[in-house]
Image 1 (tube, rainbow, N blue to C red):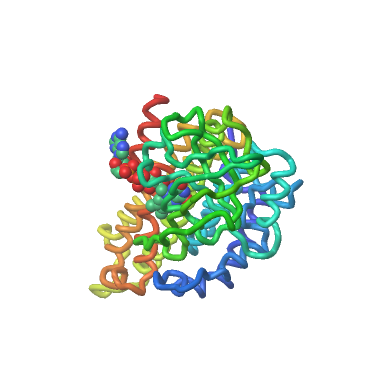
Image 2 (cartoon, protein in one colour):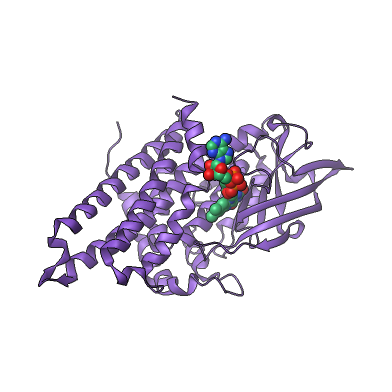
Length: 378
Ligand SMILES: Cc1cc2nc3c(=O)[nH]c(=O)nc-3n(C[C@H](O)[C@H](O)[C@H](O)COP(=O)(O)OP(=O)(O)OC[C@H]3O[C@@H](n4cnc5c(N)ncnc54)[C@H](O)[C@@H]3O)c2cc1C
């Protein structure tokens, strides 16, 4: 059994991250949520870079913090409770590191992980989704072909978090458009070889750069090939399975922030001469929210525990992602009801939380995809 208590080390780390976020990121939150930003605002990422928290899963031997997944989930929840956009950038970066950590050689690890462990801001992207291949990732259209000693990549990836601002993009490509997943191969593609098609304007996560990426005879060397085609689909499955637990942790942080805001509003807002919290019509939904958040958190912790113990985590991770998405949507929506008109204004943090939370039911595979995964394991 596991204890439901953080270790001293985990508590200290969470407190450190919370402190820096409150001081350096919280004051920027409204600015970060403008969709008309001309350039990516690196200041929030820089605050995390100084803590070596851009991809805190990177092992210590490569200069990272070497956090296990359970601790990663605690940190991601904390970041998301201040900015779901910022935490999504970090979750995207962690996704990009996973095929490298699982499948790359030593020199490749040294090379690609290095920019993510300095105190300079940097992000990475994980590119799987394509215009024709969203839920169905059994036949990717992005292909790689040998070209002398090197390879060329051709294809389009879409809705890629950090796509236009990444130091490198971890790309999943196919040997041939007619081939299936057995021919998948990962590449870590340097920024110079990636062309940005469209910067996607999304309803939430407005801080993130979410881009369409074009690979037009993009030249990659064999040193940028991760693992081999025998292991391509395995790297992909492991990345998605582990990543889903972190997407769930992200959602948990957003839900927690919305719940805490609604609770404090309910305790101070007076109608009919008393705080609205004194009505069960208000306190009971808050009870439902708190209970669901706890349940989602325990599911995230279970999935992360299994990942850390190299257990059977696929089902637990998809369940955590599926349930957290529902909790995030329910909590952010009910929080708006509790705050009335004050929760519905553009300036309300709740409008940010509500729009950010909706992303969870799509990213890392839609809810139906999670159900397909879980159904196959029942
Ligand atoms: C905010 C955000 C960030 C993202 N970041 C990344 C990223 O960093 N990297 C990346 O590679 N991708 C990323 N994506 C893309 C994401 O993974 C895909 O959008 C997702 O997998 C769904 O694909 P789709 O949008 O093409 O929907 P579709 O696959 O077209 O699905 C549309 C609907 O049909 C349903 N559906 C499809 N097939 C079935 C079926 N067989 N049975 C039942 N229902 C079905 C789906 O559940 C969904 O409801 C991101 C998406 C979002 C919204």
